Length: 254
Length: 306
Figure 1 (cartoon, rainbow over the protein chains, first blue to last red):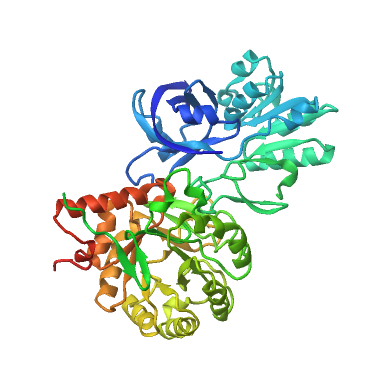
Figure 2: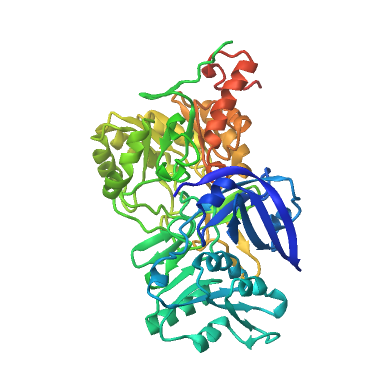
């Protein structure tokens, strides 16, 4: 898989709600080659503050455009959110190893997508590419933090929701919601924080369900050089930015 | 128009240009093939190798700091045998001088075995002795913190190889000039400096170090003034060539090192941010020479006016 570094023009920068934003770049080479689960590494400042790029997963591609959804949480995203339509940003992508679309689908299993918080971003891209209507389970802190619900429904997916505070849908963790919705023959795709993905891997192992999980990790380079984002697997340490971010749950050692 | 000469010599090594990439920041070069023509680099210094495969330190291993970053990777590497089998073929194909960085894990004698095996590989252009990695747990002090220990290991390695030998120095010392002197006296062809500065960053909510190993190495533009000063200090102490590094981000910062006395420079952390930056610096150095009517970059080395 070839990667590209380019000065990408911002085509849209729109607020979804609160601190959640949607941004589109013109990046033809990346759009053409991108797979769900892959990410772009964005340099938000030409200065040294922040110094490093920030990896953000692809939310979707269309024609020559790539889309991301992000939450303004720190120094880098506070700069990113101030970038206007028409400005250019230095981005690298499509990086990493995305979801395997073929294997699980071929077995005719029920496709279940499990998103925790911002984990909806790459799973939206995945749902588009899977093309079969999936069951999407979205977990968030409160109903205010829920994203992409309508978009998944538009694709024909059925959506079930959990919130930690019970402000909408099932009250509790999305992993509990998953336990309540397991079917005899299903396949899991998940993205979220590590503790959530660990529980999903446990569930997958317990019921012998194929599962792919997309890990989030701080990265210094994003291109496999620094060895700062490794994860333990049955085949030794792997780089989240290269061999990941998507791994088969069964291959990971938690 | 005048075409300035930018080739330099480091020991027996002839480099087409003085810009190389620093150990640990360029993987084994293959990681960068999509972003630049690696054939145009002055030299490539590999991620440090140990005799046996090494898992490195627990996560988290890196974090960002003000104009810099911390790392404590702990020399994760596949070991010499797997390197030769799986990583060296791509490096050979580049045609660029390959400098292999090596380190010992337990006993300094491991350096001798590593060098003995590398010595018989034709494409290995030079060997860099990493006696200054701050991230090996359990080590009370570094070889590069002791002039006598530095002298001893360099001298022993010198006896078994005719290849260009580069000694990588630590900034975590009282007098880096004394260590450089020891390396020169023992027969090192060049010194490379600086390795990262020993440092710590704390997560105040957790009251824990941000890096799992606790202490880590600081790199990036934050350390450049320290590195430039140390290159100047070493330049005034020894005659062997200096490979200068520490926070080089662009042409101007590379020039600082050359003016302070470096014969060549290594780009490190900047590779993570702008993977093709080394080639931009090569072009920038040429432009600077033309603009200042300097016909040979060697005229700039140590040309600091004081």
